[in-house]
Length: 96
Image (cartoon, rainbow, N blue to C red; front, top):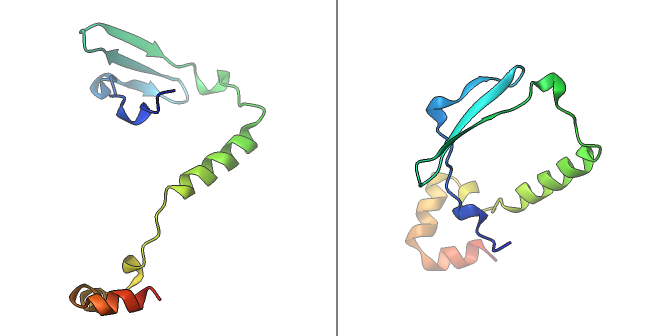
């Protein structure tokens, strides 16, 4: 992995998506070269759950929570935020 997954464009043409999860979804993709391809997912009844689903979901939740960045200012009232913005000394005191 080059760590570039976040830079990968979405080639799916959302206007051409049809179907439902229960019956299967047809997706159409088009690359930079103009070549189109269609993918049809199986109906939900034919899908199999992974045997380690609980472990995967636990790990996924932990990773997604790690991306949340708590900010002190978002927890302050609007009046307190205005005070902190107007006073560098108050900003330092708020974090002590």
